[in-house]
Length: 393
Image (cartoon, rainbow, N blue to C red; front, side, top):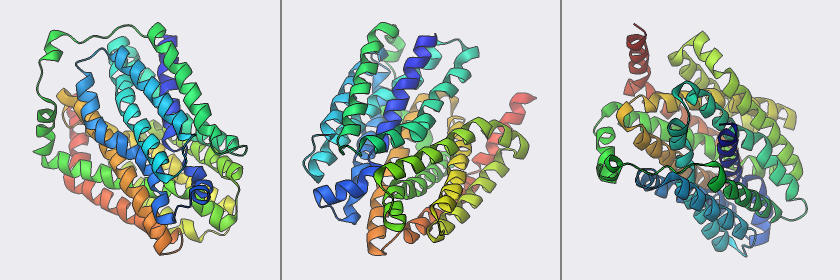
């Protein structure tokens, strides 16, 4: 069981690293490919766009296939697409290869989450899921800074390294993972898009997913342009940006491990409200901070808050309908990456138009405010609390 847990951790680590690998490289690639700022965000958004489009069908489709084969094929395609990014000769070739990497990740990542309850006893499922989630947090803390350091030699080295590591991880899948073929009932279930009907017809679900979209859109709009803003404002090099990313990633890990304690102390409703309101204030203040140290301190707090609030959001969404949790997870992931696509594109547009990060910070704050309003208006916060009480009684 240890080797399976380690395999899933590594898969999520390389996928998480690749998701925002390009963020600290934006200033370098802008100059190299002669890309205006308003289009630079699409180098981040291309990956997210591929994931967002195909996550809606990849998760439900793979329910009828052998998850082992899907995971292996997805990882191989993911590694090849990432390596090809290192050979990009311009904006459109980079866009294409990043898009293909996102498509491959959309087929691979859902297999990890679907395999955990199938391969581990229920008593260990939560623990294993936590370790796998730590793989994503660790990718922010260690993967992106490592990519920044590799880019000191040449901008393509991070893509070659992550691609090669992904290929090594893929090689272990056939040996470590048992076959997970679907049974006959799984082959004859409802058509893909009919599974989304219960969510589309639910007012609570619609408003909750809108809130989820706004939350992710605001966060990733600001996150995508951290590297460029620090380069423009504080004249940091690629490796220095990498060190800052490492520190911020630690904030995410801190939040992930302290989340249960904070929620127990404040309750779910207050944790959500306080977390989002404080983040709004931080986003507005960020562009006006006088030093790198003050920026790191405030953004560390934002990342720690993300480590607490994001799992809380996913838990509430999965509580909407326990009979279609796989479909909910696919939709939540698709919405998250759609928000990443829109957020990074719009951030690039307003960064160039209004000449700086101030407008991006205000945009992120507005998105967070809309998210909080939608969560409260949906009733999911109070509904989730009632559900928990009913289960406890």
